[in-house]
Image 1 (cartoon, rainbow over the protein chains, first blue to last red):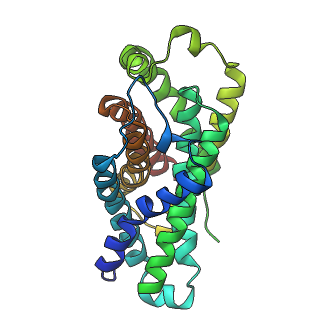
Image 2: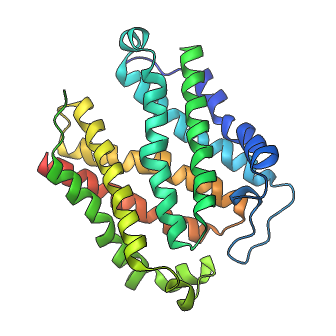
Length: 136
Length: 133
């Protein structure tokens, strides 16, 4: 197994928040969970804890992705660079998005919210793949 | 080309319903309803066939991709197969839910229930792949 690129992990950990401000701001502001008041809990105006928590949680995801890339190996990734996006995008598409759709149906949330949030994660994971490719 | 057991894919997709029936039934339904702000009336709003059909199709997709992951890894022990499935749920599904729930102002309890469901379901999916290949 190859080494883990820690710089890429740290950068990728911050991606969800950075992309989130654009995705849930100018692009789909108010459409989904970033701007949602749910379960009787009022949303805080400046969710600092949310930002720190998101970075921490995404750090875990980025570390696991790095583990996956290390398992594929540098030689294979150099020969087949598309694997960076296939692995990251595939995870978002096949695991994260279905889980969100199923859970949102259970929560009686709209299909639009499921699409917006799933789309967000697919973009975040593809961007994460790009970070690992660029710094690989 | 990798070989993926279709019987394992179908069984792994179906196990989500088994866990869901217990998880969002006798185990945590009352707490979950309270935390999610969902009433009994809300629960009956959408036709079950629509929800279950869609959920099964999505679970099939996830299970197939999981089978693909195991096939590309190759030669995993049953323990490693289950741990890998658990790791996928923990590192990708639970974290995504965590970020969304944080910004939505949802409770940690709700996150724990919804995340726990995926940790158990994915672990069982891994066990099915370990058993059926």
